Amino acid sequence: MSEVHNILTESAHGGHAKTYNRIASTYYWPRMSRDIKKYVSTCDICQKTKPRRHAPVGLLQPIPIPSQPFEVVSMDFIPELPSSSGFDNILVIVDKLTKYAIFIPTTVSVTEIETAELFFHHIISKFGIPRQVITDRDARWKGEFWKEICKRMGMTRSLTTAYHPQADGQTEILNQSLEISLRAYVGPSRNDWVNYLDALALSYNTTPHTATGFAPAYLLRGYIPTTGSTLVHHPEGIARPATESGSHDLGNVGNIDETSLHPAALEMSEAFHAARHRAQEALMLGQHFQRRSYNKGRLSTEFQEGDLVLLNPHSLSLLRNETGRGRKLLMKYDGPFEIIQKLSAVSYRLRMPQSYGIHPVLNIAHLEKYQPSPTEFGNRPTKSLNRADFDELPEYEVEMIIADRRKKSRKGRYVMEYLTRFKGYNADSDEWLNSSQLRNAPEILEMWHKRRKPLGSHPV
Image 1 (cartoon, rainbow, N blue to C red):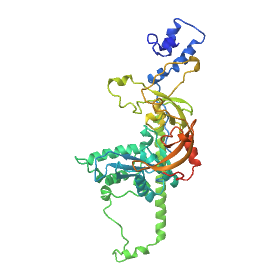
Image 2: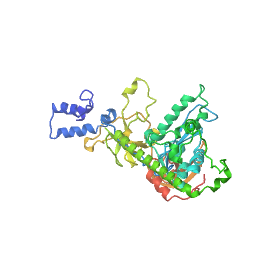
Image 3: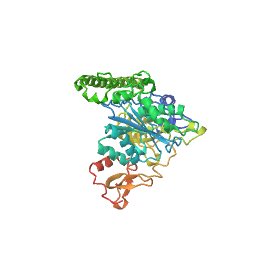
Image 4: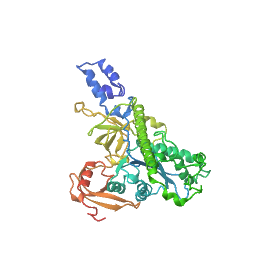
């Protein structure tokens, strides 16, 4: 099997049928088809070089519909814009239930502390503390400071998987819509976009949303703010209480019978709640059709902790520096990597070397199952991408965390560092590592946080 399958002039890493036909023309042994199929399916080179022909994997995992406005919000940046009044970035915040959006001009150099201040000023001070905040894995969201803020306020921080922006499709679609609108109004120099943000926010929030059928402002506040087009339909202006002589007397406003207003207020409140309930039903119905459309033709595949998987370096943009005609001869997959944590049916944490430089939590769309070769087949040829992995950047197994400290980085941000001891080494080899360097030891890091000492146990 090794000779026929691996040698260039034989089947040259052909599939099961080619390898079987070539062997069967000369040899026979009982259950040889089963053995050949097992040998070919566990070939390391075949698994990494051949494209997969199966349907896409991973079913849609909808976010639960919240029960009240600003219970669940999503956030994202639109960075690298032309400088406009000192701003070159937009922080977009969207409410999950009402779809109400807030556009905040800022800069690309905004720190996580400044981002938290913007969030408090525009969200918490006006709408209260959300229960869940959905963001991508920007450095301003995944840092220890933001994690501590969410923990102290009782918010759940939900980070999307790397290289899978559709996990936060709500904000991604709104970002595209905002960019299109800005494109239509900015001047030739494109440095006046900040002047249109407030007007575009009013336009978006007063327009019925396709998902709910209601304007976001109405679902949030119970009325649609008056704009130029709606003002035309109400020429009578503000109704005033009239006196017996027919003149308007504002001093008698307080004498209006409040009991007559109670039924009207109650009716308005009930209509308001009914509208929100209909919006929730519309969102649930929309999720149903989205799930059915998304899952059509997809495979319901899941991995378990301890499984070995290959990752797709092309969909992860790991080979973007490889240009020219040689791209056709690059490996299709790389690995294998061990799954050390199953976060959901479609999100997994991998044990990856530091040299990859990407976050180890990946969506199942970028992964393929790897079948290790059985020991009875002996040593077999393998092939991987040319990367500086364990040979040049060796990794050591973490035994325990001794202490932690908060240290100021070069960029002025405070990061958590942990005094780490490695298996087989004494205290002389202990090192201060941050959470990114400990990403392959999530259990030990989580265990430390559960029984950690107060901050400042070690000086900076």
